[in-house]
Structure formats: structure tokens, C-alpha cells
Image (cartoon, rainbow, N blue to C red; front, side):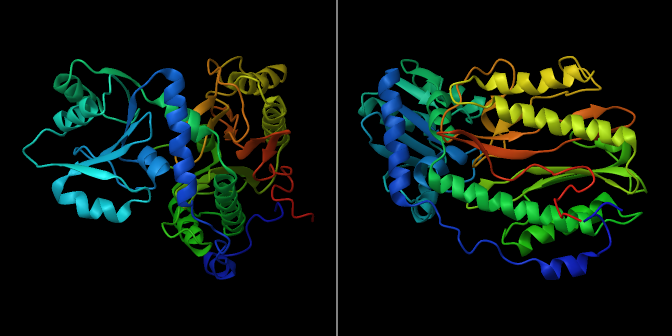
Length: 403
């Protein structure tokens, strides 16, 4: 059996895990204020008068206000000169104020009133002509705002929100680093509980508890566990099989630390490693390395995707999105959302900049046989890319145990 795979049980492994969040430092008020200032600067450059920040990740990112989006309009209007006004139902104002990190006046609307008319009135009072709209707003809200004020010029707010959110601060990178270290330890523990006949549901439940044990209160943010031929399907199958001898194993999971996400995948063999396993696994590892090397400051995001895809083509896979080969993008941005822009994919010409964080996962799928996904994340420094977690060592020693 491969080192670190099998030989233990869930109870033993859970008992050995310890809380890893002692060094966690929440984002401070000063950083929220810096984010708002950066957004205002970008709006000024674009000629916008304001942006509407909707409940959800963007509202949390810019103001520290944690509010789940629903059919009721809750959010904040931020003008180019830094005036912040919240909009919420009257009956929620007290609750909303309790969640605020960045204070601001709250404009309330009663249940029978139109919040879109209220937002348009706030815009008129502030002289807003061009308004950036949060990219997460549902269409019915956008349509209602257009009907409430046909004079407003509405533009895609993602231009500003992605610019700000994609360039992580040192504090954000530290939170991401902690989350990823936690998930890697959970991966190691999960590999040790594997046995013939274990179900994907049992492994998923263990990973959820293990994430709690290392300090993630909500457990796993998500979890994909696949065995054998099922590993050729990137996001799984309807009825996953139980583990058998000599199966490829694919586990993709993550947790959340102060709203910042981890997302790591490991693939390895439970049992005898065949020559076919080795060829596919090594090609995946080299494609991941090619993508990492291509991630240089000033290069377009799509260059990273092309590097992985081009390497795989030299090994007889693909071309493009054909399988056997890489059927999806090479990676995605990550932060407060598990998937956020920009993306490592053809057509994304965003230039790599300091602070950007990405997954690197050019999965190699061989339908009818198995798939291999090795996923680690990196961030851009002034000297180029840096791994959050070191890539899997080898198919014979995936967790670099050295024996």
C-alpha cells in the first residue's frame, strides 16, 4: 500500500487532529476603509458616480457587514466621494446595524414600499447619474431599478469589485494560508481511513468532522469524494461507487476561515499502482507545474491555461477540451468566494498582478478509466507565483512522507 494511504480509522484520526486557528486575525476596520477608498478611486477613473453593493460577499468584503442575500433588497450605496448609505427593510435595521463594521446611515423601506424607488431617490439626492451595479444582483432587481429610474445609467459593477477583490492584502493571504494548511491536514487524515468497501458518504462525513476538529466551525465548505472510474467525472456522478482495491481516489474539499476559502484536491491509488496510473498521474503533475511556471507578473491569465493545455498536448492528450485530456479551465480565483474572477482560462486577458490568488488544477480525465486532479493554490508576489501548499510529491508518496 502507498505510504499514508489506509491503515487507520476515523476515530483514531479525529483524536489526533488539533485546532489550527490560534493565529487567525480577523480583518480590521482600517482594511475595510482601505477597500472602500480603492473602490472610490477606481470609480473616479471610470467616471462613475456611485456603486450599489448588494448583500452577500461584496457587501461583506467592502463593509464587513455579513448579510445573506434574499428577495428583499439589502445593500449599500457607495458614492465616488466615499459616502456610504445602507438600504434595508425597516424591521431589519437594528439587526443590520449589529453586523456593521463600517458605519453608515441606513435608509429603510416598509414591506409595501418599493426599495428600488428608495435606491433611486438616494441616487438622485447624491447626484448619481452613472451607477455601477453589483454583479450578484438578480435580474428582477436590476429590472425593477431600471423601471424606478429610467434616467440612471447602469453599468457592471464587477469592473470595480473584481479589481479590488482580486488583489489580496497580506491579511487576506494569511487567512487563506491558514485555511489551506487546515484542509491539507484533513486530506492526510482522510487518506489514512480508507479501506476496501468504504463509501464516499462515509469519507465525506469524516472530512466534515475533521475540518471541525482543525478549527473550521462549519466543517467542510464542500466535499467531492470519488473512486475508480468515477474519478474521470470532474464533479462526480449520481451514484458513486464504494472503494475497491487498486482504485484511483480523488478527494476535493475545503473549509472557511473568517470567510476565506480553501480548495485542495488530491489523487492517489488505493492498492497497486499500474503503469497507466503512473503515466496519467505524472502528466497531470507536469501540467500543473507548467501552469505555475507560466504565471508571471504582467502575463494574461489565459497564458497560464495555455501552458498546461500545451504540455498535455505534447503527451498526446486533448487537444483543447477534448478527452482524454483537460475538459475545463486550468484554474479560478479564490478568496471569500470559492470561485471568483479572474480565471485561468482562454479569453481572460486580465494581467497577473501582485496579490492575485488562484487554484491550479488542470485535471486530466480519461473516460472509462479514471481521472487525476492535483489542485493547489498559489498567489502572486513581487517575485512571481508562490504556492500556498506544495504540490503532491509523487504517485508513490503523495503526501511526501519520505518512507
